[in-house]
Image (cartoon, rainbow, N blue to C red; front, side, top):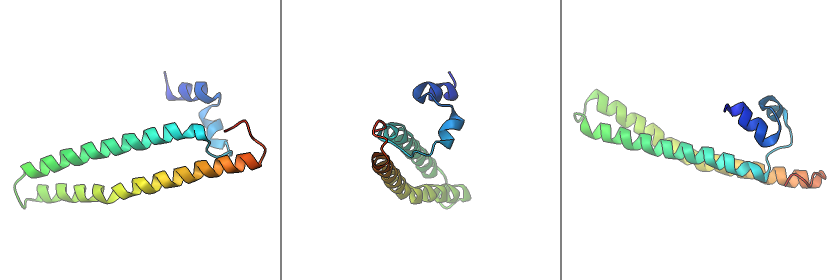
Length: 109
């Protein structure tokens, strides 16, 4: 089953219609967002573990080890952004719920 069919079956909308949907995020959108961010965090942890293991097995001071350590440092600098992304998504969901409640769309929450 393709992703388009799953999305269409889930919400009754096609991907294009979801992209044009201006209603904002609702409480039902929390699960997919958290699932994606958790998957990214797990993959990031695995990549960091593997790269660190490779760097420890290389010759000290070699170009390959320095390049591997630079990549690990770049990934480590990205990790705090995951928390910021979660905060922005949570704020978007809260704003979506508040705006929809004031707009009279009570069936969305």
